[in-house]
Length: 207
Image 1: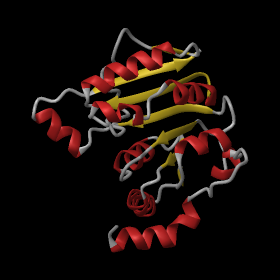
Image 2 (image 1 turned 90 degrees about the vertical axis):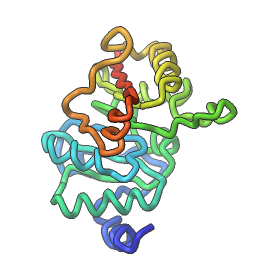
Image 3 (image 1 turned 180 degrees about the horizontal axis):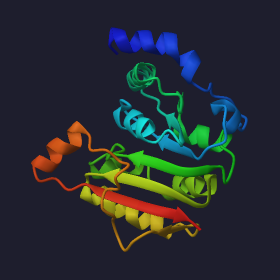
Image 4 (image 1 turned 45 degrees about the vertical axis):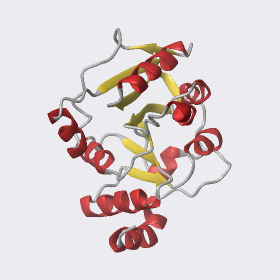
């Protein structure tokens, strides 16, 4: 954790974070307005999160991340950009979803480049699993969307199978979609594309 990230974490977390608690959060009250609410599970260093929020001030974005340097990095971006439509929760995503987000409350969910756990013996650690997908589907409003992106072909195929097996979700196309304009290309992604890697975007909607 850099000194700048530590300073941001210590100084800005109280301003831009929702403390974890075992009670549903009134998201409209937390953001101070009624607007579409988009949840991001695992925002990493926050580059994509901040860019999307800046480009779409009509939406509110709630980011969950356990990695402390990443939280500090996003907090710096929020402050530097004067962004008032992002809040963060520094806690385990499953516990947040179970205990803080009410059913049918979210308009969208973003899961961008989750840890692929490439070794076969570690596949069970992948985020996209039936139990979590069921929980995510319950938290979406009817018509709400879940957008997942990965550059690992095996993970993409697994996610496609798991997401489309959930009865409350339906794929928006046959297979994968072209990257939608609201998801910016990251530097890491651009390097991968330059090396011939394929990025898979998958968008499903809540029935």
